[in-house]
Image 1 (cartoon, one colour):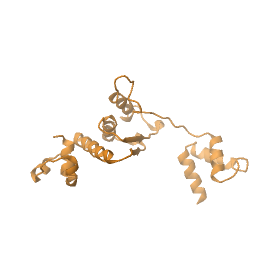
Image 2: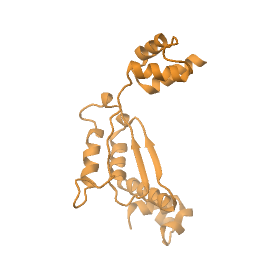
Image 3: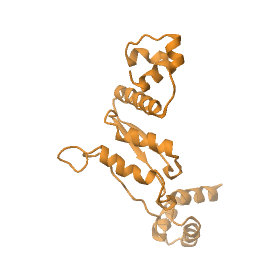
Image 4: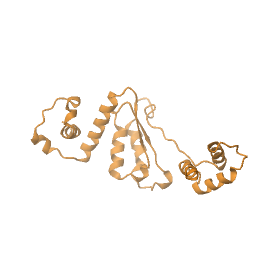
Length: 184
C-alpha cells in the first residue's frame, strides 16, 4: 500500500468508499506517519479524485512562488510532474526580479519539463508554457486610467497617469490599487 493512500484512509475515513476497500483498524491508523513522500502522494491522490469527478478542468492559481520554501516547491514539482493528475490546470506566478539564483523554484520548470517528456515531442503538447509578463508603459497606463475614469486620454488624465506610473513602476496590480485608493 502506498503511504499517500494510508494517510488519506486514516485522515479522511469518510473517503474510504472512493479510495477502495481497505479494512482499517485503530492500530493501523495509529501507525501512519506523515513523511514528505506520504504528503505528496496524499495531495496528488486527493486532487486526482476531485478532478476525476469534475466535468470541466479544475484550475489552481498559485501566486508568489518566489517566496515558496523548499518543501512547498518539492510538493509542487511532484504534482506538476505527475502523470496521474488529469483535468487540472496550474497557473503558477512568481516575480522573476525577486528570485535568487539558488532558490529551488529556479529548477522547477526544468524538472517538470524533463518529467513530462513524451516520445515524439520535445515536451508533451500543452504541457508546460511559460509566459513573461512585463510592466505596462506610461502610454498604456494613461489609456487604462482614462478608461477607468471614463474620460478621453486628452481630458487631463496624463498627469494622474504619470504620477501613478512613477509610483507603481507600471505594475498593473499596483495601478489598480492606486486607482481604488483615489476613489475612496
